[in-house]
Length: 107
Length: 392
Image (cartoon, rainbow over all chains, first blue to last red; front, side):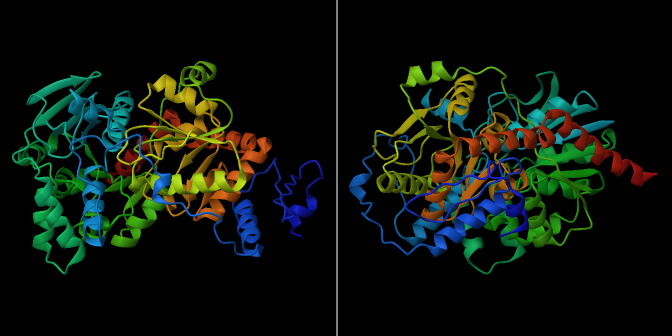
């Protein structure tokens, strides 16, 4: 047990018991994200590797929000994906909030 | 002190990250300096074609001078050229051609800087990767300050930028990670550099109940605000989120705000709201369990700062060094590299209101210590003050 853990009072300890797995201990008055993430990684590492219980197949992704008209189709293949990636990366580098452009396009 | 802010586009209608960043900083620094914006007539960031009238304008009381773009960008041609230089051995001349295509090609802007360099004490350039910064800094290196707004993408490794990054008198970085990256690619540690970022305006009053009622949203939800795009990590987010729900049976929802370039899964617990007003956006944020930031590339995520300003923890993509670094420094966010980490971190957030509350408070503290406008303004003043002292 680390020094930090040893000085935590019971009240400060959070115990999340899930399927008997290892707990994540948190000092709520002094949140240490690095420590929490270390505990999460340790917990995952000690769990038996599980296969996904179900496949996420294409049919799970029924689009109801299509891309706006006029945009290039989705890339297929490594080369076109790289190209699309580069194009998008550059053109949209500044477009964090491109509402203005969309408004213009929709006018 | 007369200071020119030089940026690729400028206007109230322009909401792109670097341009908005520049406008906000300019408007705030007007209290201290005689400011002037030098920019192009472009509005469209894809072609840069002229849109605004040429010449002088006044935007929120800031004088703006706009210069014509002599050749709009051809996206196809530019894409081919960029693809070539990023995947092939090439010469410096090829990179210079790339820069011309990158644009916005406005030689008259550079000529103006050259002819009026004695009228200004400093030129603050925004966005390293464009024509105006490259040629502007090369024209007045002795008076240049660069706000690079760089992300960890291949362009930053071009050799023209290695040279460029050694020329300004100072850098104003968005994050510790951005500074490290630029130091690493250019070995410019000797150039003065401060991590500053940008402030943001957060409404004090929000209307969570109204928001929930209007959009019929009940229970816990994660919120994503931004462009819904594969490059922003959204496809992976959908997969991780749906798998988490199937494996845990959780009734958590995912609320998406912004424009979409991606097919959004049709699922009752994934709610796409499109664009929201600032008031609704902050109400949506305030009502959330946490903000999810799945992006692989961020120079400075303004919405992450907004989440922290509203006391909300963040669940971020750890493969974005900036986001991971911000979470660790603030102790206000968890992060994930894969499905297992996503699920464990989200489980923890869902099961512990005490944790989300404590991280939210940390976020607010981090925001107040680093990203209020008073802090940002003082950092800009400090950079210029240090440069002035060097002259003595």
